[in-house]
View: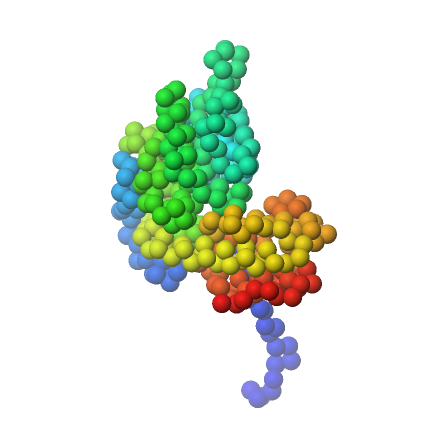
Length: 364
């Protein structure tokens, strides 16, 4: 009977190309092997050797005294907010900042601080924008407690903050006794785009958070870096937030590989994002300036197509391209290690199909 064909053969499912975020990356075979072989202990007792190696190596790369492994970038950011502020203060950030828009209002809930968002046309804050928003020294104003910068600026299209701008903000803030935290979730992307090591880019910040689980491709984890005193205090706050993960060396093992090996290939993601931007710029109804695309994120306007971004997203999904709307007019593509140049070409063809356009992009 083995020669009789199956009455209901399984349907072939075409591969989906996931451009929603670089958080969707899958661990490499090398990472999976390292996770399986990881030496572990209880990290709450500081006895997990793989976690300890990861934290020490991250601190070395960033030229910092210490680092702490946390499950998410949001937790790393909120630990920093907690440690740098006191209840009743304000936290200055850009209007599109992750710490303001996508972290559940935790600076208010956990640290009892209010955000002071400032819009910047470039997507990042300069001291000229920050200075007028500082609270005056009058008792009935909520005092400014912290400044948070984000590099790269996610919802500004992955734009990089130049070195001199970051240094200038830190210098002026420190002159008046303010701390500055860097949400460096994608700081390695900024490092590649700007051609400077992360230690140099982040040297003047009071604390830095970066993610292993985005462009670097690890399955889980971020690190918060700073002085030894700050990181010692961070361990208590991490525990309060439920971040004591016990034998988490299994995760740190993948993070070590991501930290050592992944930065060297990020330029490929940047080139693919530029390729997408160049192609989208030729599609009728799509509005994007390819010159603004610096790293692996591109945000483009679909309002010229006559359909909301949510509808455009659905049509892409019907063509096995996953993307995310930013609002009614804007959409976001994010390239990463699991998206090839051929995948980008296929995504462009899907956009052209939706818009009724003929391909004007070379596949090379």
